[in-house]
Image (cartoon, rainbow, N blue to C red):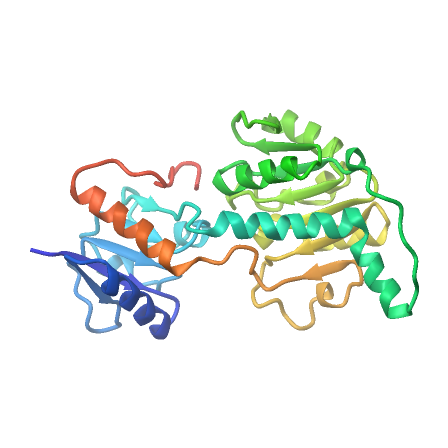
Length: 312
């Protein structure tokens, strides 16, 4: 009997679009679109992105669930998710290159003064700034998983001193690494540009608060490409207004789309982008998930399985 996979996206249109992508390129597997009435409880695997609340109680026979994204915080919080069901996240799938470009863009803008040149252009002012001194722009990367490690190494290759922090100690060529609570203190104290790529867990929620952000070097800059709930918005804005932080580039927010009345939209030292730092690329995603399903059916181990106790 063919392997049966149920696909559940955020909307019916999204669900059917992903089902068609998988069905076109993966032979020997039956892909079914989730429906309120017509999807039976006998799928072998699930591929999901923000599925409905009743999804897991109606799929008791699953061997594993694949998340259409690297971040699994919303999936892990779903009611009815069996505690022993393997949850598999995307690994890169074309996201690392995009994340690197986004972070390097933000880093170059603040360290090279491109934001100031934009203001000069609007004023019709020809005013070259002093050349960059790379050693004056130490970067700290919070989160050293697959994406964070790629970003940290790219920053080092671009000539900036870079350090990284993670829950457990990591070794990355060209990157000073820290771990644990003491390591976080050390990272923040040496950082002028803070890049957040952490997974969202109960331990990391609200981690970028007044207490921690105030430990950054004076005039520091924050780039957040992880989750909005890492940042205490009021604390970030207060430190910018007080002059301790010079600004922030934010791609993720507690509520998305970002509400029209949120102060981030109007703040002159905050740049907002609509969760686009690293989009899921369709071809790479289909290939990666299909290969993992096939490996599981052969009884082989796969990578990307979430450690349920850690949440990532």
